[in-house]
Length: 248
Image 1 (tube, rainbow, N blue to C red):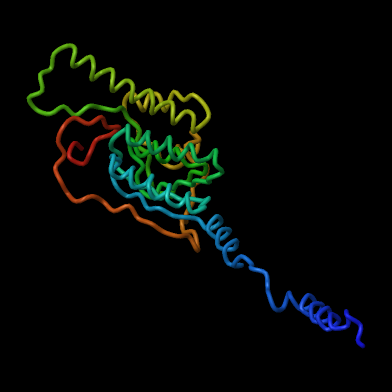
Image 2 (image 1 turned 180 degrees about the vertical axis):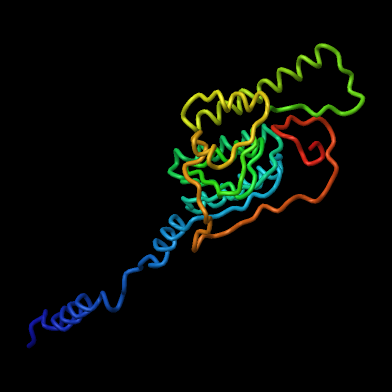
């Protein structure tokens, strides 16, 4: 008569074989190897934005949306190519505050002057941790002004209010530029109270830029352009850091 447990031996042997080969039979799930590499690639690849439009709520909103979208994808490096006649100071300040604030998140921003950085465009330019200019470029800094629609009643209270707004915009612009160059500057203060044009060499001496470069091309950078809006007449009063093409 067979031992009552003899029939269990083949079962134990089979179970041992299954355990021995289970890694081959039932492989463990693994993360796709491309995901970490892709995230690292996005973080290291610069994102270049061409900003060749006036400073207004629409253009700065598009700029902020582009940068914000890329930051949410893990982008760490941005290059903003600037050539702008300036425009709305408040829009320029909003863009500056947003871009400058990204430095605390480890976001690296570089700005280039590719032609003209006029008026409120200086505010966006100052958002760059690294700031460069090509040789044949200029920086125009001057007082803000209010464009008043024809027929607006000009009593003393209205005029005083307008003056206070201009003084406030001038002070805010001065604070941004002086914070960027790291010192108080009689030249910048005088320019904001009146008007002055700085060439790249003068901008370098002031600390507005860190280097005059002859090339702005970044190989391998992802690229986006901010398109100019459709032509349309502007209406209403607007605080501006510089003359528009119609007022030059």
